[in-house]
Image 1 (tube, rainbow over the protein chains, first blue to last red):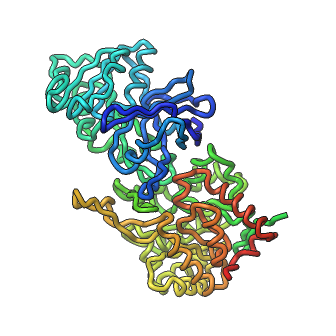
Image 2: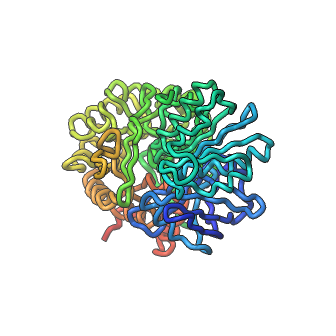
Image 3: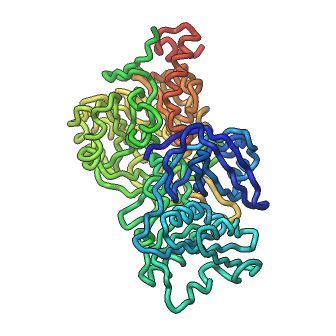
Length: 258
Length: 302
């Protein structure tokens, strides 16, 4: 899949709350093919402590408008600096990067996102729903402010929510949701993105029930195109770059996950 | 007509801009962004006798105007390079130069001997300066005696252009350069990364799995310039300069300090097409200053 460096026009910038924001970026040309699970490398300007690009999941795309959406959490200097960008400004990105969530073999799919880890799952839920798959999305967060736009996912299927403080949905960890306590785990496959401990717990549960689980890793990286070899994860076939051979992996491939 | 060509021993480069080992893969990773045949040369990833998995994650930490890495020479070994990578790259119209590494002198000899047989590999860069491996690497490059020993051993088995990559983690880099020149090196390249460290104070832990790693990026450029200037005054062989080059102006500074050619490293991670912009920028500079050849500015520091 050919990669591009584009100066994207910021056509939308919206705060979800003090922790999260969404950028909408318009390509200078026709948007290249992008598959759910892929990411972009964003150049951050205006902060001398930020030297490298930042890898950000593609939240959704619009092929008619030639736009992509990025859902970003203010976590460090890079994402904080980027939050000050305004509509009408340009943002340089390299994209589309990485592999993608695989097409399911059977119907009835469960998507599990934790906090900002929900980011790649919006496009995935739409993509799967448009291909007539039944999609259920489970969203977890510390508090209701971490449950980002659940109505967006309701367009494509059922949505369940957990929060640690019980301010929205069931109280507790996402892995403690009642759908994991049902007598029969009815989903044919699980896609997950979020904190490592959450993804490992979800993956163990899925594999225990004989279902495949695909996880989206967010290892630190420099280049994003397979040159620096910094973002590796240990797989059953040796160290692999999460930027080119990931970020999506079947959890069975990852050492120490099962 | 401006002539960008330079020569490293018998190796003619169409321009002095090359990409540094470990920052440009095998070139293929960058073909979506520009025509890599425009480069003077491509230094491919450090290649060892046997396959290496490298160090554990995390291997990278961002630092002010730079980064630390501790990849640890992850590569599939010289035989894989010859069987799988060489056939794919050999007909691309630029020079592929293989960075050679090892834990022992015997391993360096094995890799260099095998590469000597490849028609389309005109040179090797002997890596005696990798700070991220437990054995070999920088251990060879931090004493004149061991640097000289390994260079001599390779000189006996390697008949084409032999470049030795120097470590900045030494008291006197010019002495190292003189030692490898006397041992038969055709050129020296410098600097490799500076040994450094980064810490997460809140968690009270190092940011790299290996604790220490190699610092690169604009933060190291003043040190690299100083070392290139010192080395180019001390040796007669051509010097290849690198360390934090992000722009054509940076590259020109290295040429003025005496480098015959330069390598672009960390900048490739931020702008994959940066090296072609640097080629164009050097040509613009020469035109603006009414020079006809890159040689007009090499060592031209007033």
